[in-house]
Length: 91
Image (cartoon, rainbow, N blue to C red; front, side, top):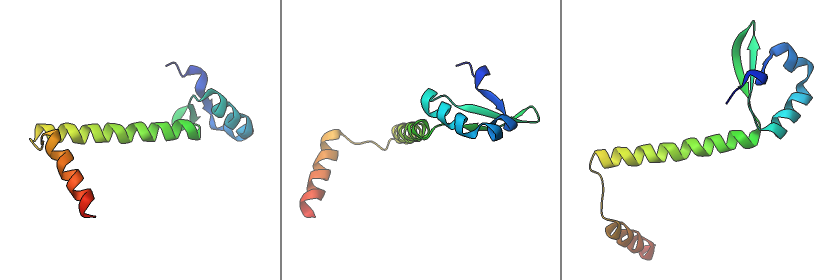
């Protein structure tokens, strides 16, 4: 992705906050905010933020699963389903 058009100084954000929010919502592309020529923050719409958080959660689950595999903490699927069924009948 090329974010060259998505880089704005903080003064632009201050002067055009409502327009910036509308653009973020419509384009769903993040906006990099600079201060004194240096990138300081990234703004994104709420829907994109939520998708990012869900993606990060799934990646964490995958990483934990891979670590369990590497450390030998695995069990046959049939055993896992049997234990889950037994646990549900006890409740």
